[in-house]
Image (cartoon, rainbow, N blue to C red; front, side, top):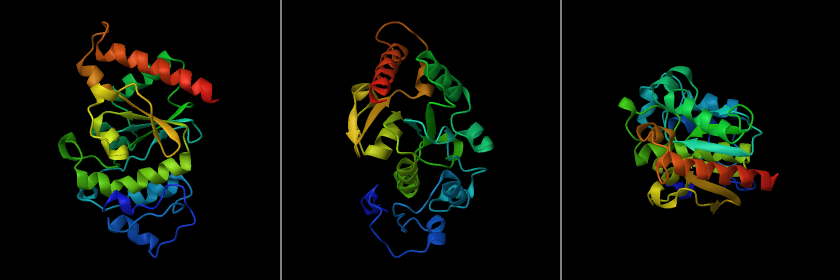
Length: 225
């Protein structure tokens, strides 16, 4: 399903003839704005979803964690083994580092952000999700964004950037830059797993750049309050 078929994110007046129960079974079924009222309803569909083949191998769909009223949404790539087992995003080493990164600028993963992924089911062997899998799952993420209504969206890594904004530029080229999308601010940042592979904190290293980006994000959040 082309993302162009997903109805406008906030236009609840648009109508479509569809069966709600068919959504988890057929990727050709669009998900109109207002289909879901809360994360629990999205979770119900995702846990019985077969819009792509990842439904055949998942243990749990991974919907999100954090504060649904938070002003910041953090979007990751896909669940890994720990996430598949627990049903929660960013709970392994990458998640622990992400929590510490947030704490470094006075933000809490429990109260100040909501964390989700571009796709809700783990790809086998933690491979990157395919374009088909991303397109099948993207309408769920768009509904999450509509419900959460965040002021800021942080896109961790190239898959999140491409999956939501269809932007194929390397993260290294545009990290730390604000991108306006659907009347809100998005910023691409390095994925925590990349920082684990590049632990140096010397100037001009990924961790150093992440620190600069997080200060910009915190300043913008304070400005928007």
